[in-house]
Image 1 (spheres, rainbow, N blue to C red):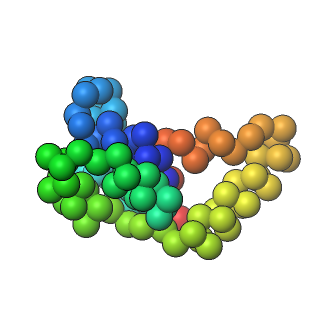
Image 2 (cartoon, helix red, strand yellow):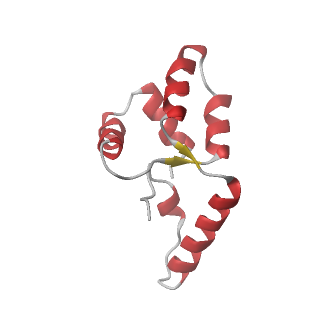
Length: 99
């Protein structure tokens, strides 16, 4: 699940580490997902010069509906609560693999 911070960095291309990982993920069989909230946050802070890049970015990624996001978060919380860990680190990376 791509966080808005990751989407912004990918669009602006300032962090070679993030760009490198994003490229790897884009070439894999994994889906790169984003939530409506992340999409809205990115568009809210978008510079006019970034609009074309954002249109391409969002057309090539999969938006997950809010209800699906809530369900995914709940499932991760349940899974990690059994191990004493928090699921937050799982929601921050650029990708949650396809099941």
